[in-house]
Amino acid sequence: MQTATGTTYIHNGRVIDGTGSPGIDDAGVLIESGKIQYVGPASGAPNVAKTAERIDARGGSILPGLVEAHFHATYFNILELEDLDIKYPVEYVSILSAVNAKLAIECGYTAARSGGCLFNVDSWLKQAIENDLVVGPRLSTSGREICSAGGLMDWNPEFRKIGMEGLVFIINGVEDARRAVRALVKDGIEWVKTYPTGDAASPDVNDHHTLCMTFEEMDAVVQTAHNHKLKVTGHCRATEGIKNALRAGYDSIEHGTFIDDEGLELLLERDVPCIPALYFEKASVLRGTEFGLPQNVIDGHQETLDGGIESALRILRAGGRIGLGGDYGFGWNPHGDYAREISFFVNEVGFTPLEAIMCATKTGAEIMGREDEIGTLESGKLADVLVVDGDVIQDVTVLEDRSRFIAVMQGGIIKSGQMTQTDHTWTNATKMG
Ligand SMILES: [Zn+2]
Image (cartoon, rainbow, N blue to C red):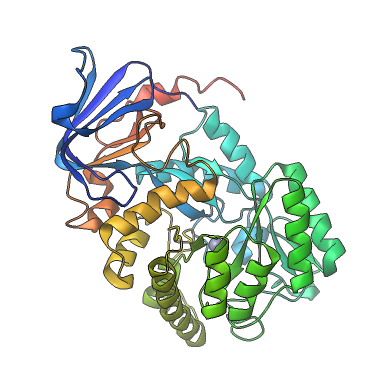
């Protein structure tokens, strides 16, 4: 991905640097050649050249670009699971994923960690973004997911006599588990996404208290993945499934819904980040009826929402790390609503705005393994910056309103917001990877 040339100076705003420390009023951020050179009080800023481009934050907020830590680029606001692997071809889904990637940038999300995708779309989407062919967040990829036979993702009825190879590897035993990871190694993905437990979406045979993989299968996934330097995460709701994942050596936990004392201890022991992805639950409760979800499914989502809120707060207060990502890409929880996750954590979970923003920036970058480059406003890092016309500490919901974004920058280039440099990002459109 190209970085800016020249100098940019952002001023007249309050810096929230993403580390969780209190904001700096009347701050200045100096960017040279796409990297942050100075962050601090404007009074202490080095001399800014007259030729520098200036961005007036209008008394608003200057913060790191946001990081979506549970991003499904290929989920195109689907209404049911069939939409994902049966109704539409991968060609069309790939195009839709590029549309979602652009939308994420428009929403201030300059980086994202995938939570699973169709086929190997993530890896190619990442290449297109890195080569500036399409606009999108810096991506940490995952590919096809892994679930045991009969588990949550093995929902396709046998009479259809069709596979699920686009979305998920259905495995039986450790040999299958290794085979699936080895296929992913060849795809070039970074995160292996698995299904240790069920979900409220499947109340009859795979609800949120059901296990969908054995410990041995999870262990085989981790051993094989780690051998090839891939990381492993999993959809973990049931208490025992969370502990199985942590004991098997998972590198992060998605949801962590019903974590108990022992699970919390295991989590803290290795400082494993948890991505609760609560807004999906909230949206399922709020809008489930409108979208035809059965009442027992909605009730299940309410239970996982309550459990997830309690667990997320416990983890953060115990010194653990929480990443924010809302599992967007369902009809009732569409792409573009990403920042609702942040507001939800402030208004309904009990995080302070500074904590929630830290989770949505610094921790997200750590989960991606890119904390040396992005995630906070610190000198030496890439200038992935969000400039907002509004006080995000006073009212965090301004992050949901992209009409108030003055600039969304990646590497010092304004990709979206009121000051968008439209042609710059497209000059490379004819250059192939
Ligand atoms: Zn997900």
